[in-house]
Amino acid sequence: MAAALEALTCLLRFGLKMRSVRHTRGLAPFTGGWRIHHGYVGVVMAVAGTLWLSGPAPWRTWVLYAGVALLVSDLVHHFGVLWPLFGSPQFDLRYPEED
Image (cartoon, rainbow, N blue to C red; front, side, top):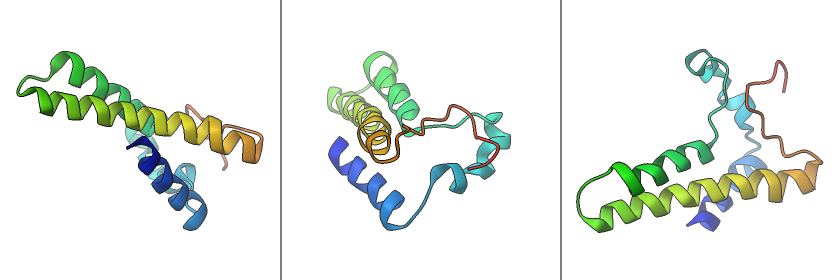
């Protein structure tokens, strides 16, 4: 699942020339200027799937796996793809003044 998410992320970044800093900048007023990486969503999902969600085990397991896949995909994208290609992981915690 993480590989599929990373493939989609690379398609958006390199195939469609999208950059999250540019294409999600409109969210900055709602996040206080903080960037929301899909890895953050993954951590929340993994914790929720482990600790908070009730219901059948397959549902909790799916949420846990999806969360871990989002986290792994984000880490691979920044530190395994962007850093070697561009010399920077481009892992901005806040929206930069200019991209």
